[in-house]
Length: 215
Image (tube, rainbow, N blue to C red; front, side, top):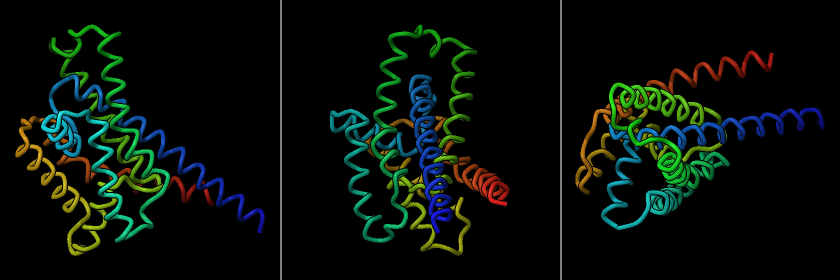
């Protein structure tokens, strides 16, 4: 029994660590997406637009909205809540605020304006953000309130593939962002199109790794 408990505890710890590093990667790469100016993920796009209207920071507004969504998730399916939920709902916005501040002081501004380096930074950050988000979402340590809400909706519309429901959620947030003054960019559309499929692919890879490690 003790051996079984230790294996469960170690697996939980591993999942929490994977989730934490996935969230850290999201905040790190998100700062480059913001500074490159080609667009962020749809949820951040919406929140940055609303934050500007309210006159607050991304981190503060995102935390407020996450708390409201967390209440919905807690009522509907609290099993989706875990340490990964806390990591994401608190850290991503503040990570982005911090790294944007840091890069503005230690990196030359031309990196985010001159071509082709600007496009290279955007492409690398886009790839890093999407993969980091997929890793965190498949870590099985809890989902962010927004991601959990999307998963709940996917369960309600189970006749549709997950990535279709995810894309619908992302395009809805884009619409809200547009209605609150945001400008659509190529990065927002690319993430909305590719995040769902990448989450599915990375999930399959991580499940295969877990299965091989447990054999």
